[in-house]
Structure formats: C-alpha cells, structure tokens
Image (cartoon, rainbow, N blue to C red; front, side):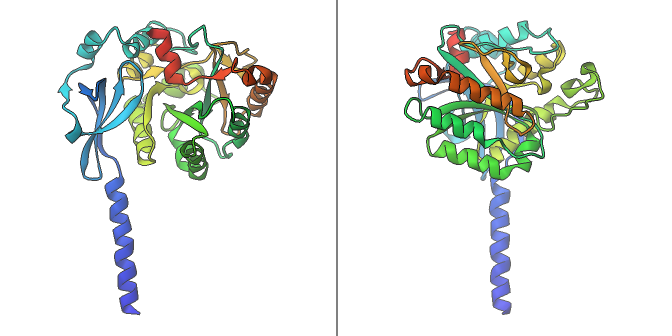
Length: 322
C-alpha cells in the first residue's frame, strides 16, 4: 500500500511539473523584426514556455499572428517608432494609423467597416464576463448554413479573461469545432477583467475607470489565451466600445488594432455588405442572437449562391489597406 501511494505521489508531482513548465512565464512586450520563410514579421512579445524562449509575431502583410521558437528565427531588436517608419506601407501599420486617426470618439473608435466590395459580413462575437454559458446556437447555425459553402466558417471572438477562465468547457467545445475544420477562430483581446459598473458614467467606466492598469488588462488576456493553447490576434475590442484618445493610443502602442462595429444588432443597427457585425455570445444578449439568426435565414438563398459570405477579420482588414 505504501508503494502505491508513493507511485501516486510521484505521478501527481510529475503532472504538476508538466503543467508548470507549460505555463507562460516572463511575458513581456518585445519589439523587433524578422524574416521567416519569406514572411516579413513584426515581433510583438517575448516569453518562456516549455523551457524555451518564444516570440509572438505578426505578418505585417497578412495580419496573421504566429509563435516562433527563438532558435528558429533571427530577430533584429527595434522600437515601435522605428518599426512604424520601416513598415508604414504595410496593411498592419496602415490599419493602426487609421485607428489612431479615429481615436477621438468616446464610443466605437477604431475600424468599424470592412472592404466595401465584400458580398457578406465579418462576424464578431463578444464574450464578456457572464455567469451564463456560451450561446452555442450561434455556432451551430453558422456551421449548418455554410456546411457546403464555406468551411471553415471564420468567426472573430472578442474574449475576456474572466469568461475564458469561467467557461473552459465551452472554450474546449469551440476549439473542437475549430480542430474539426468547421470554424476558424480569430481571438480578439477584450481585456482580462472587462470592468463595468452600470452606476458609473462612461467617462469613468470600462477602461476609462481611473487607475486601470492597461498593461495588465492586455497582457494577462494574451497570456491566458496562450496558456489555453490559442494564439492571440493583433485585434482589440474595447469593452462597451468605450475609449478615449489616450486609451486608443495606449492600445495601439501594444501593437493592437482596435475593432469597433457598424452593426451592433441588438441596438437595431443594420448589417450591410462589408459590415463588422457585433453580437454577444455570452448568454446576456438573446435579442442580438435572434436578430443574427434572422439575418442568416433572410440571406439563405444568397448564401447558397455564395453571394453572402462570412469574412475572416484579418482578411477584411488586410484587403482594406492593401
């Protein structure tokens, strides 16, 4: 019996050590550039995981993020100003420049509409903190509607850290859909805590709350995604779509592109071709979900004719700034 418990003890300790090694550590902003397999990359973050030094990078032309081992790439250290000057003509820095130029609106700052020639929409689903489960009907309806038309179906999920940690079963379900080739997920940074107080005015709410640690909100969410086996994108959505010029500048200073919406369905905004549509999939906005299902059904014939498609967020932004 003693031998059994000794073996059990070492097995448990072994699993704990594996988990500890897999945890992202020393996660920091680290700017640089690199050329990797013909891709012009901007290095955004540096961290340690599984005993290795790794980088989070973005392709400045496609806007796709990827993870690299330090042993696989030669990085030239830089600063944000130098990178902006060197790669100013790429879609990535053009998008950030436009977001900065649109930073003075308190609500819906950033990019709100895609390439105007698109025959369809870009769907963004917000996952704010909620005790309610994921509204799986959204994803089931998408997969069913586009089963023979467009696979995987691209969806952009604006996820908060609190939702991620509280709904691991739902997140695993989404990842299963992705692994089976039914959907393609773009993970949008929606801050870690997503502070909101309904009694406070907008000027002191969400990220505008005095004393908010924006670095913590941004980097902790990215770490949570990486610890969960997902790669953060370069896109960011302000909680409540509320911001000011200083906060926008802070977010773009992390190398992130703010994404708003010109079609928040629950507020009665109409989705047109090229719209960046916003619905909430955290169980707190059933009206918006119902409106989206109606929108999907009303365009059923166009879907079947490939005249009303779902667009990948990265592709949408890239096409606008090429």
